[in-house]
Amino acid sequence: MSVEITETLGERIKQTRGNMSLVEFANLLGIGKSSLSLYEKNERMPPADFFIRMDALLHIDSVWLLTGKGAASTGEEMTSDEAALLWNYRRCTQEAQAVLTQTALLLPKNGGGVADEKTG
Image (cartoon, rainbow, N blue to C red):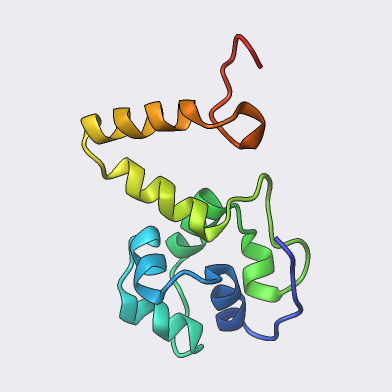
């Protein structure tokens, strides 16, 4: 994730959200849209579990979110769009997940498809 210098926690949350809508990002994090809006406007401090979710889902470092210091990412990055895809996939029926997995297997191996462990 490219990191701009942002002054406030709310700005860093909004930066992390990227192009995802407020509703989509709130759903991804399992919080209400109004709560997320208040966090982004610096009108309310998020609870501790918000920071845990940001790290677990998006690999966003809590120290960076709180202070703006250090690296934004704690490891392999997942964009907000990727996180939304995963969030939606996890809420599909088993049948829909099977169809999506089969579709992913049709993607070119070097073009971001699901890698087959045996063939690399």
